[in-house]
Image (cartoon, rainbow, N blue to C red; front, top):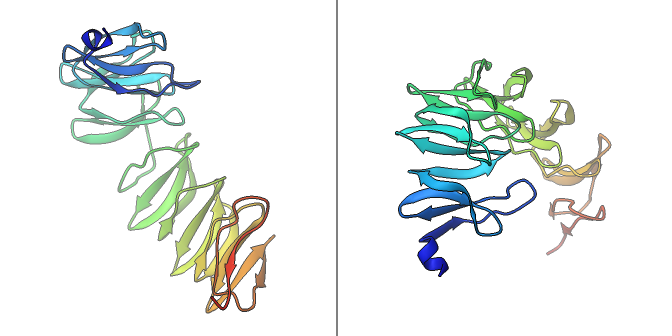
Length: 231
């Protein structure tokens, strides 16, 4: 029976990039294929799911990365380890958190009060309570000048500066200047904004007030959105 074969299936995340699932057997962790056979024998005390072709595993109290054949790609020398995204991972060694590439080489990053995970080729940096953006080359794309940068969606993010909101893209270009009291998500060259008590749209950089609107929701599909007026 399968139950006798392995005690607990921890995670099944099959997909085009992730062909293996994490499994516990006799107190050890390994990985099985879609056919239910072990691709990597259960021998690890702790392990994580694959990301970008590598999985973090623990050996003798230290963490490193293996490939889908179980070969060590980055030796287990780290105290703690996260996951790869955009070819970069955050790891801890000797109580210091640093970035490494997929060769295990430590990357020299711009000075930041905190390390942030990479996503779609960019990561935040923070200095003196201000937030900016770096790329995978560890170049500063946006210097730490914003009070808040929200997560990017479709290549755009809401930013707050001096109590006002705007929109930037992943290259740091200002799409909607930080002069509005609130902004929504930017989609198809349009986003809703609030200026004082007036709701409106910014379309190709031009502010278009929507008279009587009490609220406007984000544009999601078919270039249409929803507004509220007189309840």
